Amino acid sequence: MGVSLKDVAEHAGVSIKTVSNVVNNYQHVTPAMRTKVQAAIDELGYVPNLTARHLRKGRTGILALAVPELGNPYFAELAGAVVDAAAEHDYTVLLDHTRGERAREVLVSQGFRARVIDGLILSPIELEAEDLRSRDHDAPLVLLGEREYDLPFDHIAIDNVAASRIAVRHLIGLGRTRIAFLGARTDRSNRPAHLRLRGWREELTAAGLPAPDALVAPTSGWDRGDGAEAMARLLESGQRPDAVFAYNDLVAIGAMRVLSERGLRVPWDVAVVGFDDIAEGQFGAVTLTTISPDKQSIARLAVESVLRRLQSPGPTGGRELAAEFRLLERESTLGRR
Image (tube, helix red, strand yellow):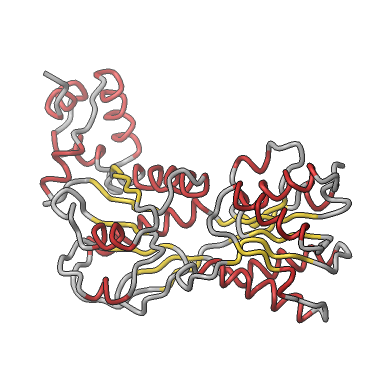
């Protein structure tokens, strides 16, 4: 059998209640008593039974995180941040992969795992407001990303338009005047692409520079191959940008590969900015300038939002929570120093 609270209490010469207060991090325990009990815990190797603790509260101790693409480093890194944030509250995270398909997003959002999770954090792509209006169970739901539903669920996102304008402003400040946008989408559901394109257009217009459709290269996906194909198509059309703002880092990395193959030097011939700040962008032959969303802040806000709903159940309005972002300037715009 494992070490129990009673064993720790006897070893420390205190009550079981005192040990429980230390284990649960209650604030009214004196520093001396906390040190004494912690020493007994360390000596005996006591491990709290988190499952039993959650069950006593009528909970499972599990949160679910559903993202569209686990193969995308941004979502993989975000998932890691959510796992870490949940662990701070003694929660485990169950991961779901929706592929950005509406049917899968509906299935997840409707609570097909409601009996095994306490709450759901969902990053939707195709999900519509009517899909959520029919939601008939009370497990808290928090939404991530740029889809806006005007429904009573907390929603966490960064300001994509403002972030994109900062990225384009950086390129303009370097003297670039023919700035292409790679990663536009024709489907209405991909709101981040539309917002980032809007930011690109607004900043060029504000600077008195042209924002022609000829410099907008659509993609059918978010990956490196999509960026490479879009960059090749843009160059083959006769357009020669002196800078590229890409929908995300993967698209930017694919574009830089094609630029290198065509004998164009980054950043001297073409400067490149991505979006997402994935780790891969720091280790290429040319490190990538990028917009860096605060993934840790997004994760923390998401987990805290779920737990807030668990602590205060009942009908409440949804909150719009903004996460921070910043521009990280690297070699793809500044060159190697």
